Image (cartoon, rainbow over all chains, first blue to last red; front, side):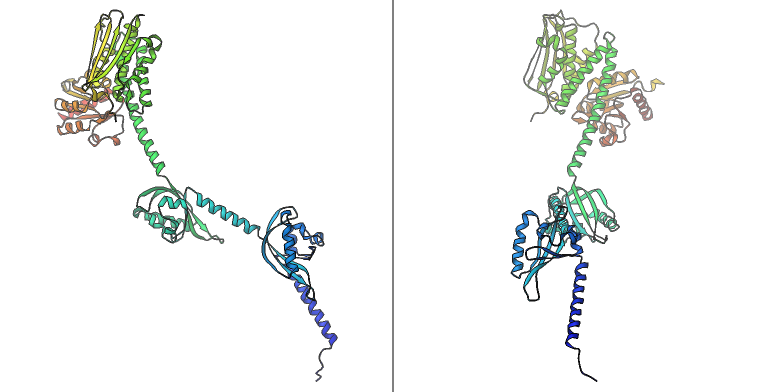
Length: 461
Length: 121
């Protein structure tokens, strides 16, 4: 048995071979790395450039090796390279440095770089190696997460999330305002504390549907404020999934619809009211039509249309005053309008400001229409010299109103008692529990109306 | 045939006097007597005992004729409701009364009156 070992030259060959093997292995690792790895000299010339770097920056190794690393650095960041080279020359490592580099096509890339000094066999620093990781994706994700959380925070809708067992996991500012609980109060608490006892079953159903991956859209229901006050809300619940697609919870968007509900209720009331008034008005039109037709002396169409117009003028006033009190002077002006061209200057109206009830305004308006029509056809307003005075006042709980014609043709009591006369002497006074007296003096007719104030005037505040 | 109800006195309660008097004329023309025309709740209550049937406009401006309906029910006097509102929106006293919408179809109203007075006798 010889105990002679390998010769020195054998050692050298083996060592060389091992070094070569190790170098080849390292080269293969670098070449196949999914991180971009490159090396450069201390003055910034590129000396190696792996496949992942080609992929990241768009330059082929053959076109970039020998070029300056500054090709990759945006103009405003060139100073960074000076600082990095200085640190490398001093033997320091620059780790996980976040910066921006340029793609061959000019695109800006968000990257994370780690730079280490490269030394020769004698330990002298001769260059640097650089590992570069593309973090554009992560940056974008961070930005969109920040954007989403800003949207959620500033939303006017309550936005909350919960786990599949109904535990609250997030709670935005609008939810705080809507329900009166802070995020601190609610996170980790069961969402069921917002649900009235008689609606707890809704949550069972919602959780079942969410677990199946369904969305519950615009579900209108009632939830509870911290104070116990019920809130009308519209809720949209959507499943939240993890990256594997498994449902792990739910997001909830809650909108307060109390205002909308109130508005809907108001509209319903208003429509019912308008419907009722319309039906009443039609009843009145039917009665006026029949009464007008019953008086054979009158031209039906002319009289009927004029009465409808008077009714319409009253209606305008009522609507304009929201069916509240109507000013007497406004009523006189409205009924006077159709006679403006013949009579405006010859009709005088005197009286204190008073507000009539809608019923009184309608009745007195009809009376004024009949008086003016009659005056224009046969009375004071049919002659050039004639005039008429309307006056009113309240004395000891009695509302007194007079219509007096002066200087007209001799007043004669009409042979037939038409609908107009009946309105003035019976119908209008009866509507207000009062009296109406029509008199025929030589200068023209007059009408004296008396009625209890409480039946005529709107209650004043 | 007509004689069966021509002596029946009908009360008309309606806050619009024009509609009230026009209706009274037509009810008269249909062969009934008019017990009275009331445009207010107070007047209507006064006339309850002197009528055999009544036509009640439900809404009388700021009041309703519900109290008249209750008094007539106590007196066992038949009444018909007239309203622009739907039955569901009417006071309880009108829930079981015949209801006519506005504007009223008087021939059908008269037929209903005849029926109510006939079955009551």
